[in-house]
Length: 603
Ligand SMILES: Cc1cc2nc3c(=O)[nH]c(=O)nc-3n(C[C@H](O)[C@H](O)[C@H](O)COP(=O)(O)OP(=O)(O)OC[C@H]3O[C@@H](n4cnc5c(N)ncnc54)[C@H](O)[C@@H]3O)c2cc1C
Image (cartoon, rainbow, N blue to C red):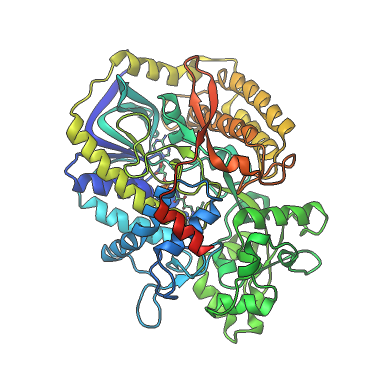
C-alpha cells in the first residue's frame, strides 16, 4: 500500500492562473467548496507574465469599437475556424469582465479623461487592449488573488496532478503529489475544472515557463475527452535571441503597438514587401501613416508590423533564411527611432514599456531607448486544447470542464494578442459557474482505491529502475525534435519522421530512472512530466499531418496555400479503445444568421 492524503471538494480547479482563479472565485460564489491545485506558488502562474494587455471592446480610445467589431476581428484572426458562439460570448462579455476586475481593485493605465486606456495590437481594428504598462498579467493575478483569498478557497501550492479519476463515465477527482515532500494526494471532487495553460515546453525555443508541459490536455485525453485544433501552435514573432540563456523570452507586441519597427540587416522594413491581400486595405504602405496610426490617428492605417503573428513570424524566418538576418539569427526591432518624432522619446519608452527596458538592459546589456533589439520567433501559445461546450465549458467527459489556454475553440487557427487574458476571465467565470452547478445537481462520487494505488505505483516506477537514462536528455531530445520537425514551417515527410521519433522517445521515457528520494527531486518531476509532453506532441504532429494546407498558425511548406475544402472542419484527436491516438474531422460549428451578418458587414 502506498500512503496518500485525501481531500474532498465540490469543485477542484487545477491551475491558479487567470482562468483557474476566475473559475474558483465563481464556483465559490455559487456556494461550492472549492480547492485549487497549482504546480507552482500562488502568484507565479504563467498569467503573471502577460505584458501587452487584455482585449475588450470598451471603446474608450475609439468609440467606433464595439463587441461586433471585436467578434469579427477574432473570427478573421482565427481564419473562421473559431467556434462562433465562443467568439460571440467572448466579445460580448469581455468589457464587463474588465470593469469587474477594475471594481475588484485593478489599476489600469488611464486616458486623459480618466477612463481605462486601450492600446493598439496586431489584428485588432481599433485600440482595444486595456493595460497596465507592460505588466498587465501581474495586475490581473494580484487582483484575482486578493479577491479570491477572501472567498475561503483552499489552495494547494506546489502540487502536481498526475491523473484524473472517474466514477463510471463521470469525472470523480484527481490524484497527484506535493512537489516539496513527494507525498501523494487524492482530491475527490464532484466536478473538476482544468486551467493548466499551454504546451510551450514541448519546444526548444519558447516564451513559456517550466509549468507549461501540456498537463491539462494530456489528463483530459487519457480519461476520454477530445482534443481539438492541435495543429495550431502560435509562434510569436518577437522573442529574444541573444544571449543564449534568454533565448525565447517574449518581447511584447506592445513594442510594435507603441511604434517599434522591424528591419533586416540591410536596414529595410521588410514587412512592407509582403502585405497579404486580405489586409491590404487596412495596412499602411508608407511609414508615416503607420506611425500616425500608433499615435491614435483614426484616419491612418496600421503599420505592417501589426499584421497577424503567423505572417510576421514567417516573414522573419524568410529574412533569416535568405541571409538578411541579424548576427544571432533574428532581425532588428527598433523602438529607439521614435526619438525622431518625440522629443521625450526615452522617457516615453521607459514609461510605456518598463519591463522591456529592464529586460534588455539587464539580460542583454541593450538600451532599447538608444539601440535596436535582436528578435526572432518563439513558441508562444496553443490555440488547440480540450474541446468544450461554448456556453458551459464542459468537455465530453461529464463533470470535467476546461478554461483558458488549455481549452480549444475561441481562437480557431490563430489567436489575436490580448484575446487570451479576456478568454481567461470570460470562460474562467463560465467554467466555475457551471462546474458549481454540476456539482450541486449531480451529487457525490466514489473513487476506486485500486485505481489510486495503481497511479501511485506508476509514479514511483522511475525510482525502481536502475539502468535507464535520466529524464532530462529525453526531454531535451523531444524539444529539439518538435522545434525542427513540428515547428513554424512544416512538411509531410518531416511530420511523419516526427511520429517515428516520438515512438522512440516514448520507449526511452518508459525506461528513465531517477536517483534520490521523493523529497524535492526535480529529476523525478521531469520524469513525470514526460507523459504529458509526449501525448501533446503526438497530438500536434498527427493533426498537422491531417491538415494538408496552410492556414493561420499552421504552415505546410508542401501545401503552402489555403485550401477552402479544409475551411469546413476542425481536426479532433481522441484516444481509441485500443489506446492508440485517433484523428478525426468534425464539421465546423454552424454560425447563427445574426453572426453571419456581422461578418458580412465587417468585411
Ligand atoms: C510572456 C508572455 C506574455 C503574454 N502576454 C499576453 C498579453 O499581453 N495578453 C494576452 O491576452 N495574453 C498574453 N499571453 C498569453 C497568456 O498570458 C496565457 O495564455 C494565459 O496567461 C494562460 O492563462 P491560464 O490561466 O490558462 O494558465 P496559466 O496562467 O499558465 O496557469 C496555469 C496553471 O496551471 C498549473 N498547472 C499546470 N499543470 C498542472 C498540474 N499537472 N497540476 C497542477 N497544476 C498545474 C500551473 O502551475 C499554473 O498555476 C502571454 C504569454 C506569455 C508567455
